[in-house]
Image (tube, rainbow, N blue to C red; front, side, top):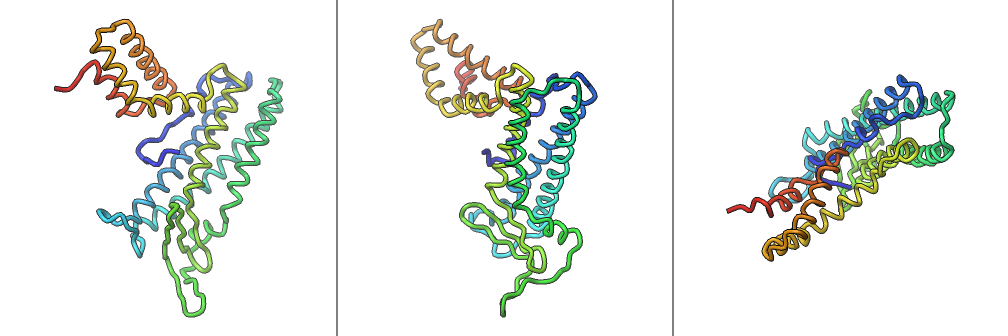
Amino acid sequence: MNDDYSNFDFFSSRLHYIEVTSDNLLNIELLYSLSVFENHVYGVFLQYNRIKEDLIVPDQGSFRSAPSPQAGLDIYYYTLTWDKLKKIYVEIKVLINRFQQTPSSIPAPFTKGFRLWKNRIDHLFSEFDNEIRNEYEHPSLEPYSVGNLIIQGSVLIDGMGNIKAHVGKDFFATIKKEHSERIQQLRTDLFDLFIKNFSEKPLTQELIRARKHIEDNIDSLSKELNELKEKKNSEDFYDLLNRLIKCDLYFSKESMPLPEKVKRKIYSVLYPSD
């Protein structure tokens, strides 16, 4: 998953005009709930990366021995965002249950796929203790002590990017890179479940792979374009360029544009810098 907090793909717009039932109000309600779900996924992604930045000493690359005030706030917001995800997840389940009670036919593969998806996200949510959130909402301000060791408000980060923060008493908030990655993947899989069963669009996961292929091979593609241009092989040059531009336009239409650095390498062939 992407670690650059400034670059997050929002896929919910791919669900526009997908009709799950003949009840348009229900369809709109579902789209809204899925959009809110995605916004909170972005919140988790954003807060995780902010917390990591809070803990790194600028220009040294080492981690702070004591957290900054901003780190404490970001960890608090991170915890609340997971709580919001749980709440909108409940709303989505209620909506799916209402869909299944409408006269519209819900494909059996969707019902099975959603059940499997629920098991996965329930397993992820089970790793978050409600007592952590409650301690943030109603702080005891009590330290954690083991023998002569007293801990209060400390934050630790390991080499894997996992963070453990003391909240109060014997409660510790755990901020894992794995959790951020899993909720992003669950978001994509949920949206693809609707796309696969209620539209003819390509799956988001397929588009991600296609885009990554271009990103990974942009240097060789750019080199090939330049060689064709130098050889004045106009037919093959414009064929390859046209395919890349079409990909760029299509990815942008599907709310997952190519990164700017990739675009620059494509279009620099047409407009080389002096």
